[in-house]
Length: 115
Ligand code: FES
View 1 (tube, rainbow, N blue to C red):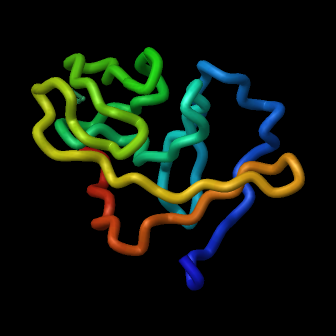
View 2 (cartoon, helix red, strand yellow):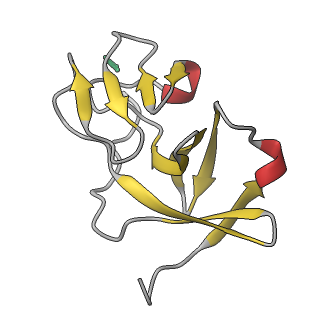
């Protein structure tokens, strides 16, 4: 974790438990979710087609894609229900002095352009 580049995303007070918000970190659109299990960050663009997950629903630790209903676990990005088959990259998050900071996973593949 030593060389992770954390960037400020938003004040924690802007994201109550049970809510999610999209933001852009290092040019990548990510989804910050505040669940009862804590804060989690995954890519915001569904791996099935082009849809923004922040326009879907957060249910506990699961996010439902608004386009075709795929379900992802926000804790690690894995697919819980199709039609998506590819997991979402999960990123690193921490809170410093009330500010949520995010570091992208250096191993995350590039995001496809909108199509
Ligand atoms: S675009 Fe998300 S399930 Fe199809």
